[in-house]
Length: 88
Length: 180
Image (cartoon, rainbow over all chains, first blue to last red; front, side, top):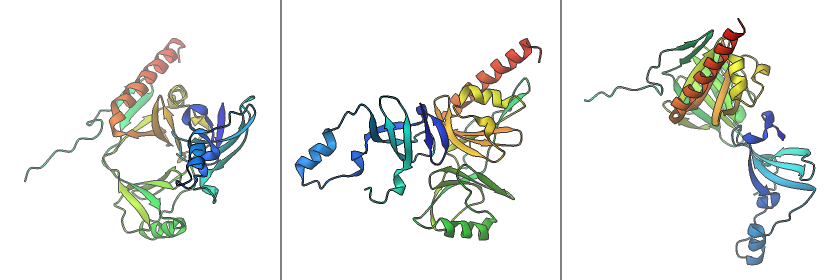
């Protein structure tokens, strides 16, 4: 599997660290326990299209939002998380 | 007052020659990371231009002017080698003793890199910089006229030499068998 980092170009999968679903970008108010529980523990496990967070750990160290297909390993989109203004 | 003797990361290692390949330590330069403050990238470029006739290079690039070199080493992060840098619109960290720097030179240097680095280094031009892996170590690789400059954290210096020299020997031995 190869990922095209917007800064470094196409790189081998071993240079990247996988964090998890893009839910991590939207942290709820800590006083809302149900939302916090969902944020920390409840995840979809899709067979198909998914969006998740990766870090180019051994490269430029940028956080990336990657749209990919878990069934076919196709990668559709790679974006810098920094460029998404609404992320926390 | 007691004067302490400074030790380079490879303790003054003499150049290691194997076949046509040479691995040598590059020592004694000041090193600073420069991380421009938010929305200050252009300002920092102007300040560096005024001070050192340099500007912030593009992604994956480096620039040289007189005794100073500046290279991109990651998102919003640059490494400056040479004079002392201070009082610019950026966070500056002294890294002078933190890195092991070696140059791998020789006509077969790309063959060595092929075995150690998952990036196609042959597509790099002189002055290009990548951050990638060398074996399992996070490494900065810069293409030079003679080969590649490799930078790893100081604590990885012995592993770096071990990995690279191992490959140099193997490449040289295979070339010899082929009668090259």
